[in-house]
Length: 199
Image (tube, rainbow, N blue to C red; front, top):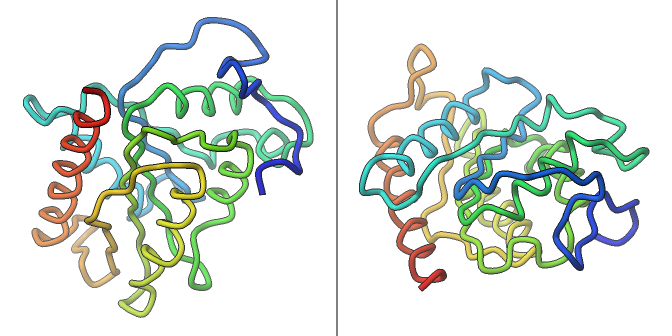
């Protein structure tokens, strides 16, 4: 899956082919929603906030909206500096938080094409939190049957607590307390795992 597209990165050196300085960010959030005000993005923002909290162990974060990246770069049709920078940010991070709406029982196409551009084992020795949203509980298993295998395919250590939110768990765009608690639990697990990896 990772070798049939033009590479935007030299994976042997982990450096952008476009050159320039890249700032390492310990926590990266990847939003796979085509809508920048989606429920899945809202949960992603909560997870990043939890990881940035003093004492949480996550550190500063950056959120990348895959929908804002140039489509030709995402599809591998041409080299693109923004896509290359996004990939490098993932390679430089210690914790990756991935969120996606569930379409037809699986994660978004945006997430798929971005992960297809990552080098093999791009997330080795990195910790990942999977977050998904769907209309109802019918797609709950998409976290374990879709997102976890995707993250594991590039070497990530995935936290035990996955997050899945339904439409009924939001009120005026705000997630219910039980969903927030699950996100905070996942963030704590991620910080603890990341600390173990780096020591």
